[in-house]
Length: 180
Image (cartoon, rainbow, N blue to C red; front, side):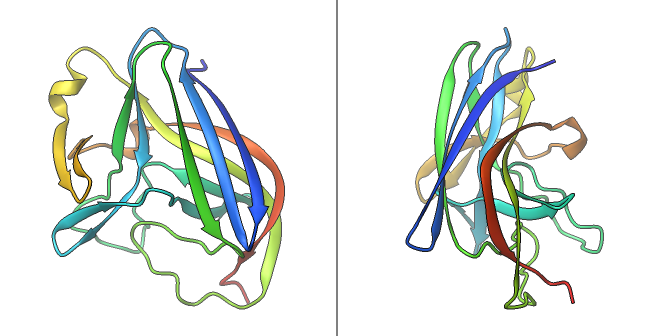
């Protein structure tokens, strides 16, 4: 069943990829978007307004804002759970991502410093993580202090409960690789 309408378009200018996206809740329930990614620095949270995660999956570059799974080879004290935007039934939201080209894989847990100067050119898709709210969902969330004021989010959330909305960008772009 489809829960969101999603559209995204991209522009390339001055060595940057700019993605503008729009989503609409087409359910009769609240939808919570995992659309405010952030970094922790010295115990404080800093939203990354125009950032996104970048990965390669099935020979496609996925640019995303979502709850990114912890890599199997890492142990972390706590998951990096993006802050959320609540969409009431029928409501819509939009956002913007800006990334340097060539793209470099990134996620909230690893610094990927071993990228080769050669880049692969692959198709690109945009992906947004979300979940459907139910009665009492808001009581499970809390307000997180950030450099932009308090933002809503959740302390605990399992990736298996996350839903994903994905759309193509009609673009083939370079991404640096760690492959030999």
